[in-house]
Length: 87
Image 1 (cartoon, rainbow, N blue to C red):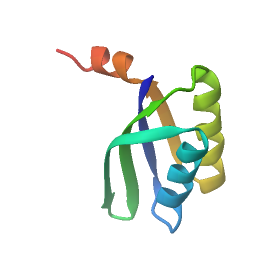
Image 2 (cartoon, helix red, strand yellow):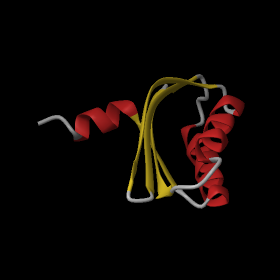
Image 3 (cartoon, one colour):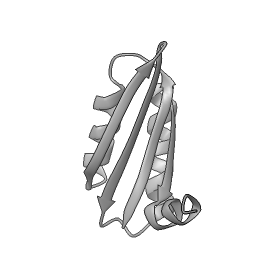
C-alpha cells in the first residue's frame, strides 16, 4: 500500500526524526519527501510504501506520534489522494 503523509505544525527540533522513526517501526519506506519552513511553520509531505494491511492502525499510530510531537499528521491512501486531486 502507498500512502501520502502530511505533517504540519510549529517548527521545533525532532519532528523529522520522530516521524521517520515511527515510519521505520511501521516498516514503511519513504518513496518521496519534501519539507519546508515558512515563518516558523513546518510542513512535510511524503509518499510512503508499506506492507501494513491495517490502514486504520497505520493512521492511528502516526496520529498518536503527531500528538506526542505537537504536530498534525494526516495519512491518506495514495490512490484516493490522486483521485481527489485529478482535474
